[in-house]
Image (cartoon, rainbow, N blue to C red):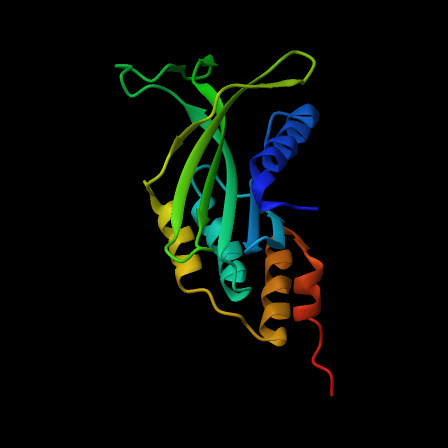
Length: 192
């Protein structure tokens, strides 16, 4: 069962399972209404740097569910801006630190509170993940943060027919979507 208080543990565990199976981490999107889980989605494939469109597709559905808490995990690389040169040798080696970034927003208490947390990690030869100390900041610093803020700021509950159509569109686009029982009941066909 998804739990908002344990969202980072859940997202790290999912990432570690992905890394045990191969080199890539599936981006994951969680949506809640207060402490009630609504949605877990693993984003569809997208080209390098093309994540915003995929996130926006799932965020629209989360907005129509009335979500007031969102968390998105994306894998990436990080390095110090104090380094004069990015530590990457094309075709040779990438010495930047691997990270799982969790972008989240919580509007459950009124004013949306945003946080971005980078969870550094290393993977050993056996595929086991070792997590480093997380690093957080509390202000939106880019388009993903703005998108999450807009999603919770303009949330509204959609009708069952609209929710079913949006869920179908997400699946058709290649997102892997799991709906909580509260959403399944909400999106059930209208009774005569």
